[in-house]
Length: 640
Image (cartoon, rainbow, N blue to C red; front, side):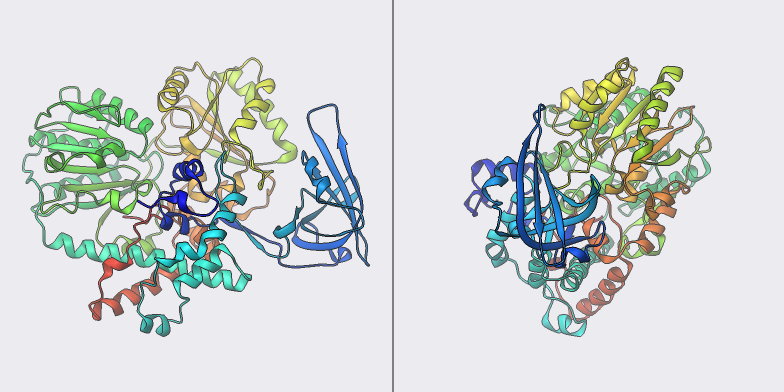
């Protein structure tokens, strides 16, 4: 593994902080891609300002004042002037600016003009090297902000690119008129213009698509030549189920059961919307394997979800030995009919363990990297493999991306009722909180309040953070029990919080999207999503699916400063994940598609997939090694 601490601006402490962001190698840092950009490349005269549009302005500083208030907050005000007019500037809690902003000197500022106290103003404008260019914004942590990440990548970009080479042959680049991958990476991190950025984003989208399709093609070839680790023949009774399977569940189970009893390794994807009953199908598969005296392994992306599965499986299958594997638990000697439920810890077991597995189930498979998902397929005789996903896949692309897999689809359960969804603009937020307070008092039901970030962000000051909102909300709900949960809280403490929430000791849980996957609390009926426009449609749909899972109807409130967002409006009237996926595919351009590549959900770029298919065909004819196309660095993951 690379030593990141030898890079410029990175020492041992900041290297550890990078590790916490999932950045372990130089390649990881190179592919830690911006999630969006601020375009300050347009320079305007002050009188030519356009409301709420980013631009750069230049003028002479005619005043600057540091204003100290009774509270800990202080305000910085300045005014600049050019030949066409004056522009007011305001900052908060940045008294050090008095050293850089000197009356009489020329100052370049960047930002969006608004009206503040009846004057045209830029609030918290950028100055210095942040003006006159396109600024990349990176996902940050409480200890590493976007500006530090940008500076570090910029200082080391040529070093990071040294060992990274173009994987496509020159004739392919010329035939399809493609950007060189190195040039694309430079423009992604340091864009010269919107046109160059778009070309680069298209090239990185293609990079992802080629990896997906190459992996699919290689796995298809691999599967044809293998036999399963164990042959399953016995079909056990299923009269122990707590309820009758829906029609789509019956169909999916019939398909999976047929696979498991065949002489070829099962490679099936079970795609089901939020709350469609994927877990019971996984349980049936493990029960069949156990009845055949063989071992099953279920891998979940989080400890919370693994614990939840463990409890559910123990309840439904009390006579079968079921074990929980994580970083703290070691497995005993396993009976030959065991079911193991694990976190990522399964990936670090020895080879003897792997050879015992007859059935592998990967839950929420998009949360795992390529190498992790395929860790057992390298065996001469791999286990039967079933992957579960609640991330909707546009059917027009599923066969291309998952060409090596059989796919089963689940629809909603018969008792399912849609979660009523509403857009809440800023002026209506206080009314919504009043309604929530009364709703909890009247019904004793519970609520989630979800924020995009753990801590406040300097570069995205309008985006809500869980920590700040928790502090702000406690006085608003003095008679309710509020609790805060996020990924930095130790797992044992998180589990205690969830346990308390389950028995209604907590009324409102303020959280990050940590609850997005697999959390099941039937008494939770309300979810408020702060800064909803910061989430993709797939994430919003997943979060919405955390409520309304019991007998009472669910409510989802989307807090936003952009109530006219087409995506949010669509979400309020459509409740099927498949519909949302198809809509997103039509709505999103390459730039937005590109920005989701590293973040769990995947919005497929149809043009990129079609182009990648054509390139793969050309490369296969030329007997090119498709393995070279597969992305193995952890910052970018692809779908299996």
